[in-house]
Image (tube, rainbow, N blue to C red; front, side, top):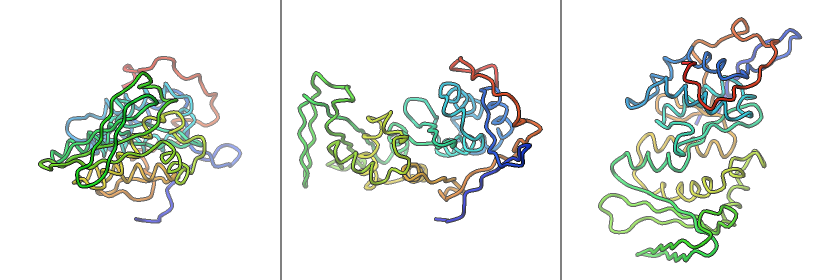
Length: 285
């Protein structure tokens, strides 16, 4: 993997200080992304279109004030990575645009990883979470066993006790099973977490727990390029690395839009406007 320093475009303000370009309204973000619509379209699989991806990014942006403080280039980079993986941000848990310290990172969700594996046609996977009061039986060996009967606390994130994942190669007699107690999951998080309490697991504990165990069983599954890249992007997000996908390979670095707007398009001395309250912005595209 390349150790090249991520490219971080900067714009001079009137005091000569370096300032990353940020866009505070959904309309501004839509205009910014439309300038690089060709790049987004080229990255997408046939069943997705760039207008929809831009609309999804704008919707996520309008609903999350922290995203509105992220650099425009990092949002574009995250959207392009999502496009290359074929995952739609904010849709059915496929992936998420996660803000931290003025940068946006795309994080694949466990549903997105499961979907990518299932799409290979060579294996299937599923995950689950155990809660206090559930009946749970887990055994390893030549013939592993996993039985889970939900109880009265099923779905209460404050009472999670275990997370598990199962995957089966087509034609195989037994699945690959991984199950971790929550204590082990949080130790794993703390060992790799580079962003402290801003880590997305604090707001999405179930999503994170399912994904951690899912990533373990995916090690034993046949992988497509998309699955392998999604796993690498997930690992990068855990350690705070900025990555891009170049010629089908995940490498360190940040993507620069083809038509990168400058100060004439988005003056940095303007007064930030209040973000739009509407969750969707179909009129912007």
